[in-house]
Image (cartoon, rainbow, N blue to C red; front, side):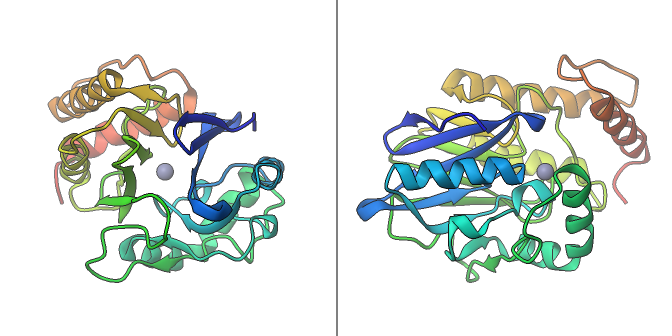
Amino acid sequence: MGRLSEIAGGVLVGTSEPYVTTTTVVAGSGGRCLVIDPAITPADLAVAAAELAARGLRPAAGWSTHPHWDHVLWSRELGEAPRFATPRAVAAATAQRADLIASAQQAAPGHDLELLGRLTALEPGVGRVPWDGPQAWVVAHDGHAPGHGAVFLPEEGVLVVGDMCSDIEIPLLDLDAPDPVGDYRAGLERLAALAGVRQVVPGHGRVGDAAEFGRRIAADHRYLDALQRGAPFEDPRLTQDWLRAEHERQLRRARAGPQ
Ligand SMILES: [Zn+2]
């Protein structure tokens, strides 16, 4: 991971090379911080922990945007802070723990597996990350994964959007859900309804400004429109074999319709 860079007051973003994966840190008072989706290799987590220590920050809470292996990682060096996620995300991470571990072992071996996916569910009805730093609103939906929870920092105008609104990945649907396209659109609509987004931080890809956020929302809807028409099509983000494979699966599923 490269150095954490400050994209807004007290909001730090680091990017790891594999899958252009971001880690976001929100600084609070007294050296306390919120760590969102620390990733992706054990070496990256070590770099992030060392940099936080060098900046005098210590994690008071963690947030996992969704129950995929690369968003539920942690390390001893990050400390024993509670790591929160939405109730549906926690249920999915618990149910799929063996798969999450296998995926992590394959893609980024060497993580502390005891810590992987050890998440605490938000209390029902709670829409904020429970910590004493800057407000962190949770925008929950089921696009991409069950209980996907983006985090919006209203004071800083930063939306940590998880695996949506990427400049380098097409919308990746939760194909285990009955209506993957409907869930994804509902998620995009919730995100687009937020007022005051000045920067968007995707889980994979580059930070964008407000205009870029609008373009990505539109690009994702266009992708879903084309998917639902059912004919083969191109998207400028289809640049890698694994994305093309996912795209083909999604096209087949879209032709079958909601189930
Ligand atoms: Zn994901």
